[in-house]
Length: 398
Image (cartoon, rainbow, N blue to C red; front, side, top):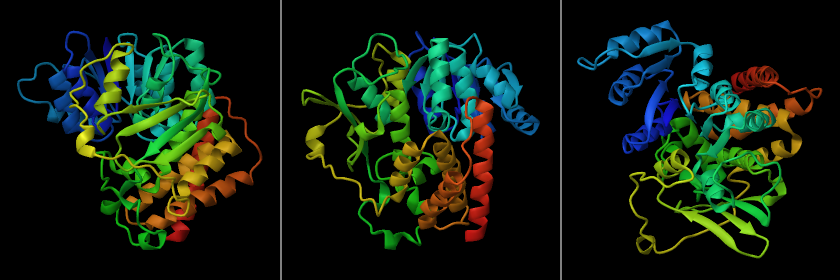
């Protein structure tokens, strides 16, 4: 199976290439894409003999060519721009697409892969948060396979009944009472909200269990990522919001659970290593060696669970509210958070101002006339408006 990795230089992309390299008899790279880290992209393309790479502009192309390793042989085909990214996601020479570009920027290419009927390994949250109805409709119409790669959704997928093909359900799985998403609680799980006003980006990115990029690390600290995952779970598993719950589980061993009507609870456990869900997605319905070591439960000794504190994690409540309000609110929620986190990482916004900015944009959205969101262009137009509003709020707060 030939695989296209969208966002190959990020943490998910690097882990995906690690798994692919372990199975040269059944997996190969078709295309790699990156936005800024051209030196790493060149190393990856040379090592994995990628026939195609996609870069954002001509300046990035020049950097890629300059970074091409001596003795690596002929350069791959270098495609440039956003249109080339979407076209590569739909390339007929690839059977599977890892959609791992962070943020709304990854939405058009993920949607292109779905429309082309690929096996879509979805690690991009925004495809469902901002465009859930559009994306799921594309999966159904093209008969694409959709495999969630987020550890929580992958865990739920593994605990649900299904056949040998991953489809897009239109109703909850029979016999399922509720889904339980677990959350580590991040680096500030035991700290009071009042203590967090002076938190620095480095402190927020110091996750106790997972190694992730800076944006998602901040989202984990605020638990905004868990709010996004609730919205994703709603679309992935056709589950009403009232039947999706969140539990804080600081050890990050139980990745999520499914409770059935008969009282049974199935959970997926494993090391906090993204190569496990990636290998599951690449090999489904078979199991592949991921390179992840065995889980030593005796060493852990105990597994703790607690309800999330709504005062410490207000972003979680905002996400539930947006899901109840509808797709337009979810688009505004995601756009506002991306702007807020970027401002925080750049030192322009305090950590505890992130939920305030998101709430302000949600209030702005709630006061607007209802919008038609039938197409990707509709979604991206509202996303752009919400970002502009979020930038205004961030500037006023600076």
